[in-house]
Length: 336
Ligand code: KG4
Ligand code: ZN
Image (cartoon, rainbow, N blue to C red; front, side, top):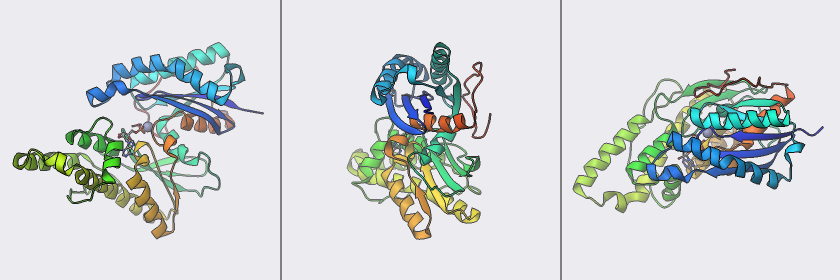
């Protein structure tokens, strides 16, 4: 029997709809909200409004691409959290309306578990347990995943997420929001000529707010001497910051892999699109003879494909939601 799932992701500022057939992604269409660029960050109320405006056109486009109709669906899946509450409410209300109107069951998905599961899309013969480093705008976590997709967080950031560090430092450098992809691009043209400190946190935890502060003071000092310092050194500044973040991320991941005797490592979340991180992770895995799981670019940043993919696994286990559930701004991995 074909299981066709329409999946909805609206936890932050991307409105995404995916059609997933028996775990295979047929379409995955995302509307990014450019409205936030001029404010240098996501404005929650504008995000909710934009989700409301974007949802229907994105649903139509995604159905069209998959050549499916609403009458072909067996299930509706939606992100329950974590995320911006207003954004989640728009997606969840839409999902409930659709499920009630079409008389279909609903499946709720944890956004962070979906990022981890995105490593399994289009992939067979994955060796368990594996370690997933989830690096996004809101989270930085090291998660051990077993063959039943049980996930255990063994380390995380105590302050800013890795993506947040890219974005906040990028803002100091005058780059548009979100700065991560810009820093990635400019880094390719630069050298790591400046050195910034790596926070020494206990165990497998991270901290990135110190790096932001150290870049802030460094820039202040240099700009006093030379007002053109940033524009004259932008590529090298980007490369230096990017290499520091990557070094900090990979150090702890390596420690966790060795301590736990794990042989497969993956990255997920928006920052996993970073080319420097992808290539340094691949080198580290090669040196240690580990398998490496890197998602396709389209499954790195927020997307509904990962929601539909994990929902299909939950469908097979009959893990349906009661229609009266409410979205959760805070929703840790593993919570019900
Ligand atoms: O997973 P995601 O789309 O949304 C959250 O759940 O947070 O991640 C967005 C984050 C942003 O901080 C953005 O700057 C970062 O991912 N990002 C990148 C790159 N592409 C997106 N950071 C570094 N390099 C990239 N290429
Ligand atoms: Zn995300």
